[in-house]
Image (tube, rainbow, N blue to C red; front, top):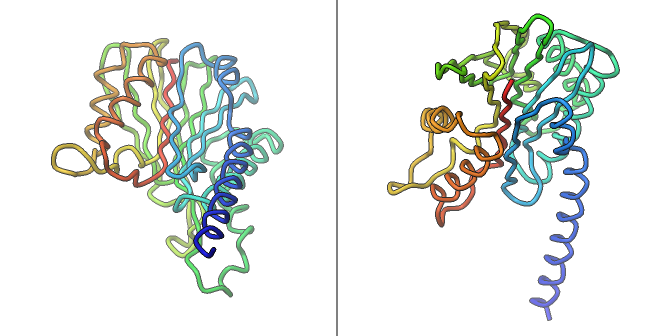
Length: 263
């Protein structure tokens, strides 16, 4: 009887997770949102366990296009709740408050995120944070503006040249890590046909292969570069196959999110 009760409870738990997944994915951009802003793009999104701490967002404001990918601490229920908070803070900062500059958006998110947990010092647990990258595309000037909290931007030029851009080395939140934080903004020109990639660290940290080691960011960047000539739809398919081949029978270690856009 005890065993049957445990099975019933597990089943109910799985049902609740499935419902939470339905809600969470309802908050993420749909394919039509991407198509409205980008002719060629993809989002590879693989939660570690039904719901995810990774998230992505696209939007348009001030005649500029924005792309965001974030990775909340941990995975599962607590991380997925953080992702909902992060999406709300993005909407507030960009769409409602109308902040234009990418570093100022991160600054506002960081402030509001910390305010959300201002009483957490009274509780004995590690405070949460978010690794996040944001790109603003100014089509009038053919310029990209990039800021990040502990993440990177991979850019593959249409001539095949590859660039890796790094942002600030601290996250959103995690206030015990750095007391005074000023997020940086980098700007650079782009040409039609250039590709940009944003992502979490889930893919590169996946254990697998013949020796059971991490995939690594270097290998991931090389894979994206080698397949950049294909359409983004096909790139996504190839990425998914590459991931499953590498992972094999190993346990998925983290949530996965990679977004690619051809400018």
